[in-house]
Image 1 (cartoon, rainbow, N blue to C red):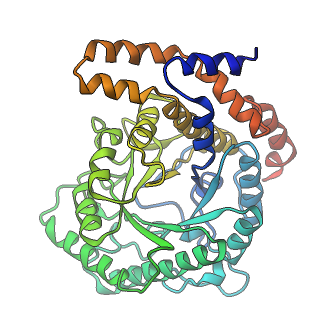
Image 2 (image 1 turned 90 degrees about the horizontal axis):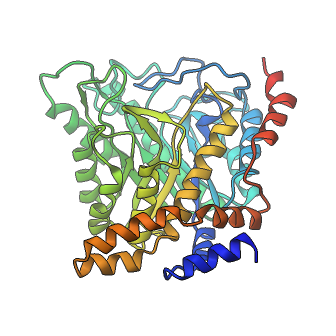
Length: 412
């Protein structure tokens, strides 16, 4: 008997069908962020990273061109099992000739990315880029009291909706377009309301652009603080939740964008009560938002459990969002995204029906005992079977080191 067959029997004794879990896993897409490969620099400007964001480390081999980034993404994808999408920021526009500013970008500036996606049979997600640009004035974009600044960024958002629909129509997969802004203040503001009212006005103006809501899903993401924005952000959780619900959009939660004592896993079920779709940016905040590489930690597992327990695999957009320049960037991609997949499989293997039944009849003694028992179930054997069926091995570091020696170290 193989290790998988033995594990399959052990799970079956608790009412868990491992084949069903693997089948469900095969249908779940994970949207993988492009910006891990080049430290969030992008291709539309030569300025430094700004907007409350910071990438630390100087590990060799950062992608410097679209071709290098695409090659690195391909390498990472070859080591990541399962259905994938690619998540792009607007700053990754590719200009063959005359450059366009962000209020003038057009679908043709992303044609190479569309070609890349179509060749691999994957979808594309998109994000307007409201940072690292000279028109970010005093840490403000869509909330700026300067109408020239505000209108510039409104037009950027409108252009991004057009590009998102282009992505969906060309690839055949719906596109999630996520709006996040860094707008805020370092110290305590005298007026919290006016910036938020301008943000609301700006979003209304962006969303006045007609688009096919069956092809483009617009989400708005909150953030509690950033570097240089410690005291106030206009796009707080309360603002973004209220705006998305009022306007029939997708609320998106990044689990690094809350106070350290808040858990996104505890919020998912609340949002599912009122929203058809919910978005997640999965990351790992250390103390505060720091976008560390995702580990198979308790919160990652609990977020995926909440999705699976509530039969919401087709209602939650799952994407990754982190960046680490202190280690091999491709290994960071593979480790983080594999851990999202591991957490999903862990959730699909939970004896949730039995646990829910115990909760409903108030048998919390048995519920605790079963919860502890499942922690030592042979999950690793099911994971290895999943990898094997996808033509992959559990260990990938030798493959990445070989790529580093042949490709990455030659980038000076």
